[in-house]
Image (cartoon, rainbow over all chains, first blue to last red; front, top):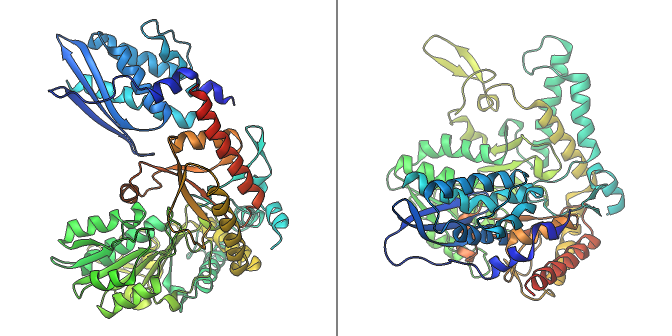
Length: 139
Length: 408
């Protein structure tokens, strides 16, 4: 088990310097999700216009994996249609199952590929993506 | 205490995890099992297995003797006055739910009070929330001191003549604090309330005497005290249990069944509907023999030494916050490392072969009280050594370095 497979530099960078952290002042689609097994929480906000994610922000408390995943996810989905965003979520699920996936849209995401070797941590990485799916499907 | 001999009794400890000898520090979640327990369960299935209380045949008698023999061992272990006061359950959670659903719902009404603390495990909190909702009773919380302990003056102020039930953990699974349940029981009784004690974290580690505590109910699990999972105990005073209705109905628990009316067996069987976890009870009996042979006083002394050493070493780690009182007698310590999430701490420790727990420990209200999202927890038992503590400390220092370096 190689720790560096899990904690790649780019993950730590997103953890220490999260992108899109905060909340919109005006209206946005808001999804709150908990990971009941560990107490981690995320609040995801999406600005959707004409079926396109114009902007995304998140707030939350969590480990380096859950927070870096949220940071990357919000970067990756900006400018994507809702279908494209859901496709990304599906690709991310495959990545978590150990499949080889290329993220041409946002390469940082590939850094999370090591998580699948740490089964106890997969739910950390998928928290933000589950919030995304919930937000789009309820919208 | 001969720790080397004790460690030999636990086959699971003798293995490498992620290239390092296993250091198991998650005992508050579940303990490991000694050979004597594993053998007792194996022997039961290989030689004596049959259903209980109905066998005319020899195996049926042997299984019944083994199961009821385990009940007698439990009664002696916690100093119950009568063997019928021992009810086998699935664990502490089921035991506390039985008290809440049967006793709680029948005695509580509008305006009555149930008193618990914010440090309770969810299993000693949600059942009472449910009783309060169903009956209109008020759920009241004893305030905690700065260090997480309970002040008896606050108990005096909180418990009133409207209080029907006081339910408190003997030992907190997060703070490691031992609550003065004997004194709380005395206050509860003065107001006509019953005292329920969650003994999940105390029973494995110290001598328990339910008659001395004078508690009315006492619940604990086998799996945290070297026994199998899936079995636990509810102790209750006979006078209370006799007047309580069962909450599970079916086989094993009936006296006479008619088309429209049925009657129940005597204590304790009226509360044990369905085929019980016979092998689990036999394993728990073996665990009690094992712990008694070593001596609870010896285990207690050993744990005090280990936790004292652990607290001393942990306080040397910069940026590490220890939750709960500084003086403690029970071998568990919850902590947080500045800027590093407990999950990340636990993963790095695991890569060093060290098992700890990270999360909310089924104590979300207590996490809010501590103003943290989760904590890391190292919990010790009779087989842990000072070397285990040293390995923990070294790995924590490595965790800090790892997360420090990773940002460069």
